[in-house]
Amino acid sequence: MTESRSLPNILITGTPGVGKSTLCQQLAEQTNLKWLEVGKLAKENNCYEEFDEVYRCPVLHEDKILDLMEDQMSEGGKIVDYHGCDFFPERWFDIIFVLRTNNTALFDRLSKRGYSGKKLEDNIECEIFGTIHEEAVDSYKEGSVFELSSNSAEEMEENVEQIVKWIEQWKQNKI
Ligand SMILES: Nc1ncnc2c1ncn2[C@@H]1O[C@H](COP(=O)(O)OP(=O)(O)O)[C@@H](O)[C@H]1O
Image 1: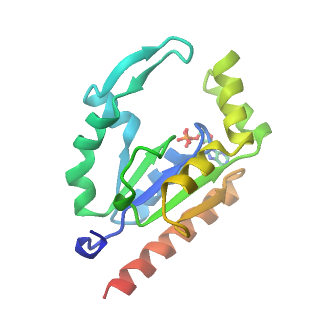
Image 2 (image 1 turned 30 degrees about the vertical axis):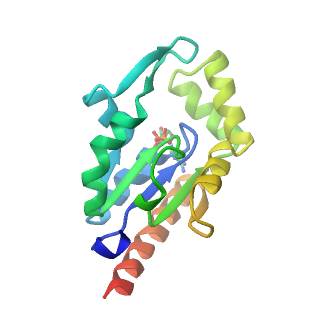
């Protein structure tokens, strides 16, 4: 499948608040890859199956969203942004980045977003335990999952730079 893509597909994942959207927006501006926000796509196309009363949010209909994304992913050149990763097909991605943030910074960011109580605590715990990183390592090829520290604006800048370089390298290797 990779053979048929002229541009790579990248997955940016991590706990809510680690900086996925901020990073993806900058990558989309600096490269010719397209940012696919899974949460936004799901909302626009009503890809939900139920409402989670504890987290006060709808639950993603995974099969529906996968069907919706399949053609775009086959084209290549997509940056996918989602706070989970075990339900995407492994073949979709050339590389997976898991953003990580320390709990003090994450607590501030999520509180500002209006998270509180169990929702806030569970997300902080998810980050402390490295749950999404573990999910990524369990779901994708060895050597294709990388953690990036996302605690400060400087680190954000470094991460953008590093991924832009990786994309350039991928294109070079393709020629
Ligand atoms: N590396 C970072 N350093 C400082 N602030 C950040 C960083 N990454 C994200 N933020 C801030 O944290 C908040 C959440 O970022 P966002 O990109 O929406 O995270 P996510 O998409 O992972 O939920 C935003 O206000 C953003 O400006």
